[in-house]
Image (cartoon, rainbow, N blue to C red; front, side, top):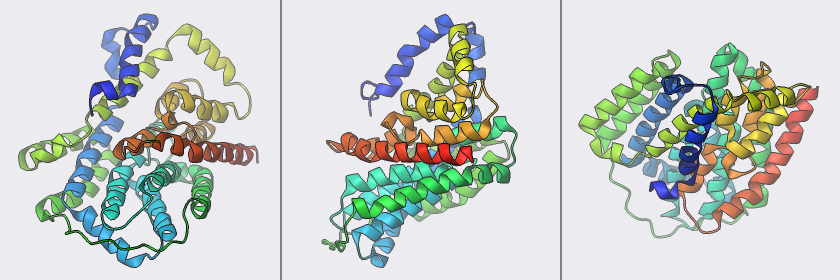
Length: 361
């Protein structure tokens, strides 16, 4: 991927000097606007998930899955559930780094509607990651600033996350028929690099422990350092520009929140029941849900409504969640963006209505 093709990165870079000019913060204050724990956690997990993919383990898992499923519909259900569960554990972005390559691996063995499967995985990770404090960057951020405990935050998110996942699963019969999985000529499995697989599997839980213990930066440095010495080729395949996108989002939204005119307008909009939910969902459609959470957290202490809103906002337009952009980037297919919105926009509308109704109870 080149910089010229990453329009989101280019937009953030173009916006930065304008916001820096308007905001009162100086250059020295910019590093403090970034949630480095989130950035470090994402960096380490991207490296480890890439390691699992290149090791050949995902290809082997795909073959095992294939022997247990007999229809495209049940394959879709399995991939949706796998993506949702993984996203609650290792973030929505990383779940896609696992499940989309798995889907592409399966497509080498059987004829599959790959584009639609990728779309449903994007929807699934947005729903599943909403449950956990570490499921996505916006939850990780809001969990930290809200002061809630891990269990308390999870229980707070359970109703909306559960409702969204049920909705996605309910759409599977609409999107996928009962056609059997017609086996094509089985290609030879990818070579299995046991050293790479073992190192990645062992490092995963250790790194997650380090992140939860507050040592994300140290853990990421260790992971990247070890891979740079032993598995250098893995680092070359990591989408490092994604980290720059995250950093710029933190910086730009932090600067925007300091502009007096914007601060006044947002404060006025956040008065009234359900306003944090509605504004969180709506703003996510414009600037994505991670920066929306970062931006609005400075103006409200209605953490449940805000968290629900920005997670629902992951649906709708593709920019609503970086997970959507990652999924569409991992599988580039003509017309896939249009297909994505044909599914995602209705899911957004229904989820928004359900979330608003549940908050009103």
